[in-house]
Image (cartoon, rainbow over the protein chains, first blue to last red):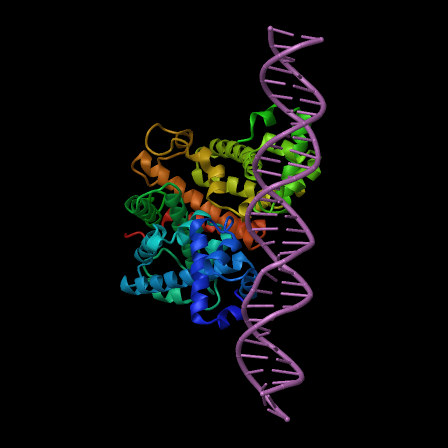
Length: 206
Length: 206
DNA sequence: ACAGCTATGTGACACCGTGTCATTTATATT
DNA sequence: AATATAAATGACACGGTGTCACATAGCTGT
C-alpha cells in the first residue's frame, strides 16, 4: 500500500505521478520497470518517490488494484444483466480485460501485467471475487449467481466452481496474449472451453 | 539455451555449476537470484558464466527444462499405467510436482519456480505436452489417452481438454503452495475440482 | 510576527549486480 | 615449433536502488 503521504498529495501531483508510473509499466514489465524513469517522467526527485511508495511493486500493485476493482464492478453488473448466469458474466469480463490489453489508449499496462502474470498479480485481480467465499458467511457473488442450474450440492462447492472459472479465464488470457491471438480467436477458444466444462469432459453415462 | 561451451565442459565442472545454480534458485526466485552468488558457490570467475550462459534466465530455464522432461516421462508412464485415464495420470503428475515442491532434498527450486509461475515457466513445463497438439498430425498424448469416454467429437477438441487440465492443474499447484496447503489438502482440492469438470459445472438436463 | 514543532521535499551518495572486453592461458592443427 | 582456435579471467563501466542528512513548508499557540 502507498504511504499516507501519497494520499495527502494534491490531486494534480498525484495524477501526474500515477500517469508516469502507468507509462513506465506500459513500457515494460514490473520486473524491468525502473523507478528512475518514473521520476524523470513525473519530474519529481528520487527521495519523494520513497516518501509515497515502499518500492516499485507498491506503485504497481496500487495501479493494478484500481483496475481490478473496476473489473470487479463490471463483473457484478454483468451478473445482474445476465440474471446470474456465471458463464456469460465471466465471458463479458474476459472480453473487457482483453479489450484493455489491446493497447487501450496506448496504455499497455494491463497487457504487461497479464503477460507477466504470477500468483500475486492474479490474486490482485481475484481477491474481490473470493472474499469469504470458502464456507463461512455467504458472499456477494454467490448470492448474485443463479446457482440452481449449477451442478453443486453445497455452497462450498461453489468455491471450487469459481476456482475453476478463474483458472481457465486467466489461463486463456495469458495464452491468447502470449500468442498474439485476435480478440475473436481469443473469444472462440474461451467459449469453446467454457462450453466443455459446463457440459463436462466425460461423456454422460446414460 | 546454454552455449556450446557449457556442454563441452568437463562433467565435474558442469555438475558443480549446475549445483550452484540450483542452490541459488532454491534460495530465491529467478527475479531475486544473483549470478554473483552462483559464481561464489561454484568458484568460477564472472566471465566464465557468460561463456556458458546468456544470462541467469538461460541457466534457470535450462534447469527447469531438465525437470520438466522428467515430469513428462512420468506422465507418459502414468498414462500407460492407468490405461489412458487422463485424469488419474494428471493427478499423479500433480502429486509428483507437489512432492518436488515440498523441499525435496532441501532443494526449493521447483517450489520457487511454481510460486513465481508465469507464462514462460508454465510453457517450459507444458511444451512437451502440447507438441503438434492442435489439429495437424496426431500427437503422442492423444494416442495414449483413452478418448472414447471423453466428451469430444474431434481430435481438435482434445486440445481444449488439455488446455483445461493444464489451467486447473497449474492453478491448483500455485494456489496450494502459496497458501501452504498440506499435500493432503492440495490433493483434496484438486480431485474435487477434477471431478467437477469431469461431470460438468451445469446440471445435466435430464 | 515569531519560535517551535511536525510533515514533506530533496538530491548526493554508497552500495550492489550486470554484462563486456582486452588480455591471458589452454588446446588443437599443420 | 608455429599458428590458429577456443576457453578462462577479472577489472571495469554502467545503471539502478534505497537512504540519509539537510532544507523547506505548514501549522500552532503566544
